[in-house]
Length: 59
Image (cartoon, one colour):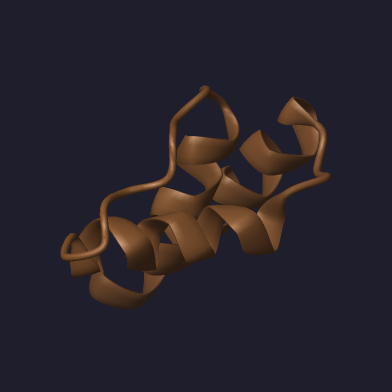
């Protein structure tokens, strides 16, 4: 899910979470790992991941 959050954050503008926001920091790190992708690349890899998860879990 953190991978997905990274792609979602790539589409918007957010500030770095506070020191004690551990979940927020994990999401931020996921976003930072995807930094540099274009919006289209981020959307395409997000959709690919969601499709794989749907196939895996039968949703």
